[in-house]
Image (cartoon, rainbow, N blue to C red; front, side):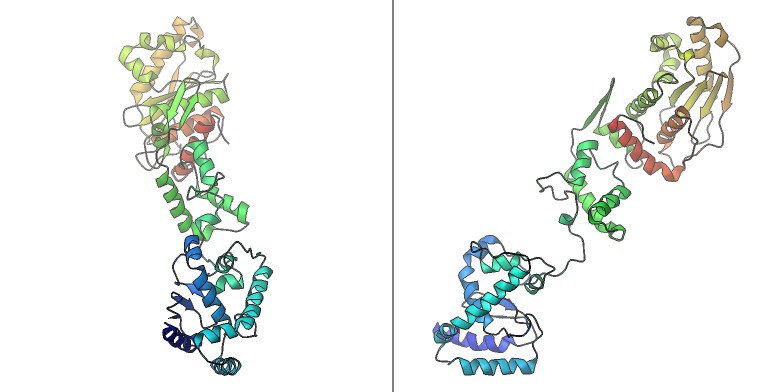
Length: 428
């Protein structure tokens, strides 16, 4: 065993000043060391765990002490020149008598101690305290990666973002809620989360523009979404209840369902309670199938003729349209995002209003009704956004806002409607 260690020692000196990464010291396990002769590192590229640190601490300590005999008095990590390396070997040979490996190690203890103190002093200057409870390797491994020592042990300055760099919990291991966790808690999913929101949050935290790192951000959000697919999130507002299946209709190119349409209409009514009345999306279907008697009680507590605007969504199985009634000038208008005009729907509403006026004893509304097809309004360019257009028509008409939106705005409008439903209020 002594002979083997002696041979390894001699080979180690030769390999120490080579220009490559090499392995040596089989008796002390296998370690890698760099041509700069800065510090030894166990198994380059393998993660170093705390249990492995404890298990092999003694071997690393001995190897580290031997390595320190090669460190020059020049600035720590200065590149070793071949001529200087040869001179260093000859100096070391003249100072230490080669009577055996054991004698060589024991005779250089004083020099090793001085070199070790220099290393610890450098570590302290890097704003890290060396704790006796930790091993030397552990203390060095804890140094910041942008420090000289951090780079010396194999760390490299990170040019790519890591999940831990973000003020959001990508891995679900953070004890404090992250940005994505807060979005999930508030909205039940990441559907309303826009790219602008994420970049804005990162800029607020890091004071840096991350727009050039969108692929990484999108990948991390996708991974987070995959781990949080199941959620029992629900929204209750008045008599309405939305679950994740209902809210999922606002994602991507999905078709909006009746529950989303009706609850959003309730928000519109509450925003302007004395001005607008929004009919349930099942109203027209009930009127067609059962006549006036089928919907007579729907306005038992409401006087329609005291309102300024009536909004009536029309759902014809695979398409959404909108009928509005302006009571001040008795005009029934039809809005459709595909330019279609369903005359029978407008006629059904006209007959209903006449019957309602007779039942409520409002003779001034028994005549003078006109119908109109509204043109030059924003149109959809696909087969899935008709419901979103109807809700946007309703909001703009109720709040007396111009129609300043287009098909390109629909992804943003979907996210905004999602947020409005979750927060139970309309947004600007």
